[in-house]
Length: 253
Image 1 (spheres, rainbow, N blue to C red):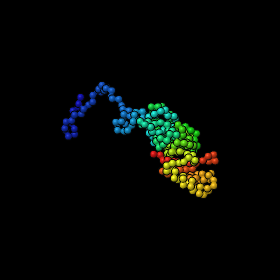
Image 2: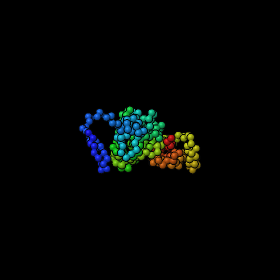
Image 3: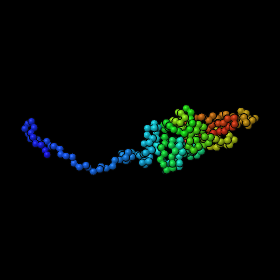
Image 4: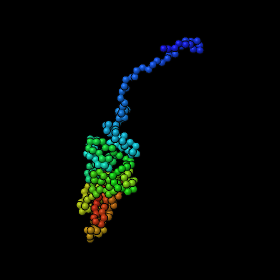
C-alpha cells in the first residue's frame, strides 16, 4: 500500500511501496541470426551458405568472394567465372577463359556448394612444395606451377612466401600461340615478317638458313614476365638449341 506523509514544506506526498513480485512472463520471441540481421540491414549477402562462407574466411587478410561451384573444384585451384554466377577450374588450354580469372580456392568444393575465393592477398595451406619467391602460374586443371604453360593462355598469379603459403596477386593474362617460323603468318604480322625476310635475304641471299636466322634474330625475345608485354601484344622469338618458334601474344579482352 502507498504511504502518505508530508514534505519539508508541509505538503502532502505519497510514497509508493512495492508489493510482492508478479508471476513470470511468457517466453519472448526467438533471437535473429547474423544472416537475418544482415539481410534486414540491406546488405548484399547472397544465400545463407554464401554468408557463412564469408564469415568463415573473414580476417584472412585477403579480399574474398563467393561463387557456386559449377563442377567439383579441387583444393588449391584457380577458378574462372562461368555462366550463371558460378565458377569452375581454370583451363589454360581454353583461350576463351583468358581474362576471366576470379581467384584462388584453397579448399576442395563439391559441385553446387559455395566456393570461398581469394581474389587478392595471402593464402595459407596452399597445396604445393614451393620455394620462397617462386613465381606461380596457372597450370592444367587450375593448379599452380612454376613453369608457365606452353600453349593457350598464361597468367602469373603470385609468388610463394614459403612451402605452403602464397601471396595471390594476379598479373595480366595473355594468349600464347606458338607458330612454326615456316608457316606464313597472316593479319597484321604478315607485312612485318615479310619485311624481316626481305631485309635478311638482302643481307645474305646465298643461304636460306641465314635468312630464317635473320628473321628470328630480328624479333624481340619472348619476355619472362608477360606483364611487361605492351597492351597491344606483339610478335616475339622463343626457343633454344632444340628448336625455335615465333610467338604471337594477344592481349586479353
